[in-house]
Image (cartoon, rainbow, N blue to C red):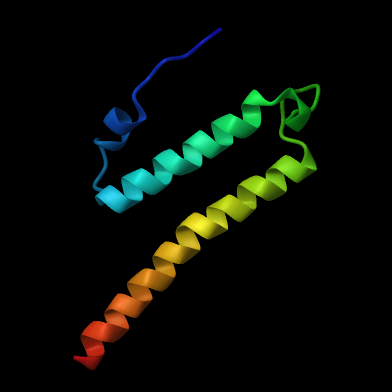
Length: 80
């Protein structure tokens, strides 16, 4: 069974910046990559521990970087 949809079209329904949309697409693509590899799946199609760890690390990388960049921008504005 295959599902086809346009993730950007779905995300367009929400108030998000372009960076947020791009980050969510990147995260979806990485999760899809993990699920496409049978070695990352249990018999019940859940991610194995190592794949879950990779996904959590990717989430941190994507969203913590955004938080740090926003904080730096706010500090710069405050200092000006």
